Image (cartoon, rainbow, N blue to C red):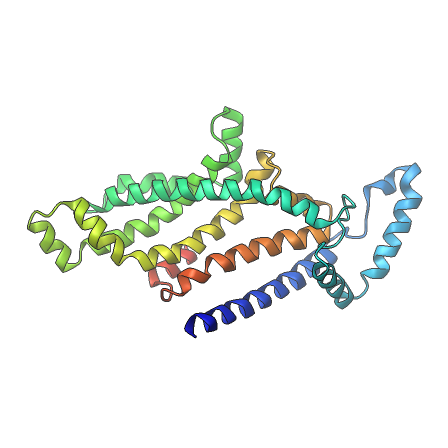
Length: 292
């Protein structure tokens, strides 16, 4: 019964989020400067055809409610609408790119968690926090994602997984290091260490189980950061993924494609937050981490 109620709440929340995504994206695209323009208007052989298409699109875009209803109806049919730029169903553009973006996200998250956990365990094991462990994370956070990707591209070293992995590791390290250091200061752990119990045994059987809810709450937060970095990374490294497709759709005001890309990202975030929410509320440290 409790699981069924949780699933129903998650579904209702997801539907509301997707509806807000549709309305917000439609508003941003419709009232963006130059929405009803086409580069073909500058070319004489295509100018008349482009103006005719734009006049039809302008008639369909007069009502925001009509635009939203049209997009929802196209989703109900399973095609996701017709791309303004490519002239094909949106589902044919989204599905092949999900695999490329998903592979980058999974590899980046795995690399980031390995680096963040190993670094935070070593940094928190000492009696006093050392500044040397926090300097690399601070420097990585100070470098914009696009700049880091450009440096890797120019130097011909690294790739999208490395850039996103370092970015995520730097953010996760700050949270994990504080959480682990607070755990090591618990009275029973201090007593156990004084008794000579090995640190690795305490880590596996006491520290990690104690901070498991915090780690679960960190998963959707890491995914949000990864999705925010996905667009510039894929554009700079020319990866044919969902982020690059969303960028091209925004540049060409391709509303159906942009709606589908943002909806997939929003769905991924809500899905990743479903299972941690069943283990308890997000800790104060996680909330503070999101505000940082």
